[in-house]
Amino acid sequence: MVNVMETLGVRGFVSQKSDGQLAEKLAESMVLYAGFDPTAESLHIGNLLQIMLLSQFQRHGHRPIALVGGATAMIGDPSGKSQERNLLTQETIARNLEGIKKQLRQFLEFDSGNNAAIMVNNADWIGRFSFVEFLRDVGKHFRVGEMMGKESVRKRLQSEVGMSFTEFSYQLLQAYDFLYLCREYDCRLQVGGDDQWGNIVAGIDLTRKLEGREVYGMTSPLLTTAGGQKFGKTEAGTVWLDADRTSPYEFYQYWVRCDDRDVVNLLKRFTYLPVEQINELEEQVRAEPEKRQAQKVLAEEVTRLVHGEEQVELVRKASQVLFGQEITGLSDRDLVSIFADVPSSKMAREKLNDGYPLLDALCESNLCSSRGDAKKLIKNGGAYVNNIRSSELDTVLTGDSLASETILILRSGKKKYHLIQFV
Image (cartoon, rainbow, N blue to C red; front, side, top):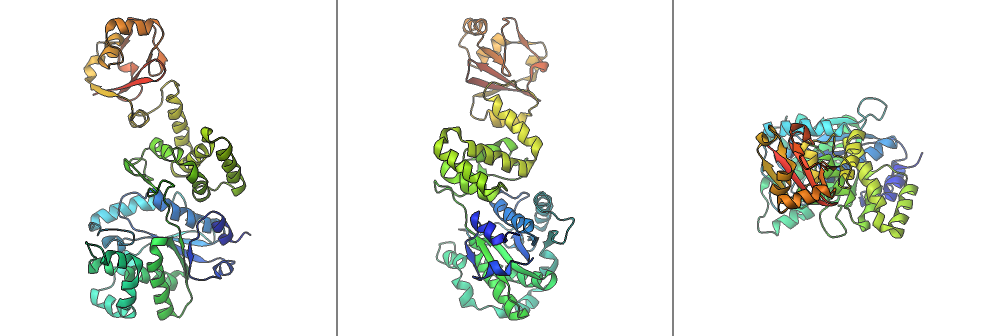
């Protein structure tokens, strides 16, 4: 069986390791964990990197623990943050936990096998401590000088906003998580992004002191785009895994639009495609970049992984709509996403009750400057309703003309669109 470190190395998952012999240690099955703080109801594609990492370990026979931080989310990890997070209520965290647990089950196998994944919530053990007990039993093993030397702490202390004692204590909680999981589940490896290195090392040290056991840490590079942007961010904001926050079409488009310089690395990390196939796609990027074949494969693979085959089919259909295919079977949200960059307007639903003349619609949507112009467009075969040519001058639009619940799409010629929402 291929050693997981060989796979992870080829796919670009490995940045820092606490032990140069980690590959040899991983020749046999090991329990490992990664943490996910429920700071929102959904994970985002930045989290997906760590999910894929856990999944690769599981596919190579190791047993992953997905830790959802019901306790640590109440504080907020300062790593990589320029200012303190807003503190969340227990009710908000509980709601977020449910959404994240559901998402994690899409990627990891929890139900069967010797390496079935485990899901835990650190509120179950951290919540048992009183403040004094935690200071006595855990805090006494940390040295303030070492804590202040951590990069995430040092950067914040040097900034204008500084760091609260609450955030300063975060690394103690994460360190204790590692110790607890080592004791209860024989967990010997923690993985995370490069910004987690200080917290991971703190857990290694605490476990060594209190258990006398050798445990390990590994981090992955933090992803940025070739253009220098933070991975997973767009002008519209974060790209979420939840379809209600980022529609499958918007999700697909994020990957399709990725830079030629990024696409191969993203294929290695976010798909299970064989490296040989990815290398072939890399050659296509060099030879025929205008076809964007690698981006299309990436977008389909990740969308299928996160949203399922049915949504991939809908996204394909949505993409074809922009090239003139008839618009059917799509929702209001799909159409708003697809036609986000075209002019739109809202009209009263009552207009459709008695029939809304197409001539009027073309004029009122500014696709035509006059009824005479609209008549000429229709006669010449250039008027389309939901991408279907409309050639009758007396055509009227009714509720049956809608492409989705409330939306109708008009088109003039090949590329001039207007979206009308009837409310």
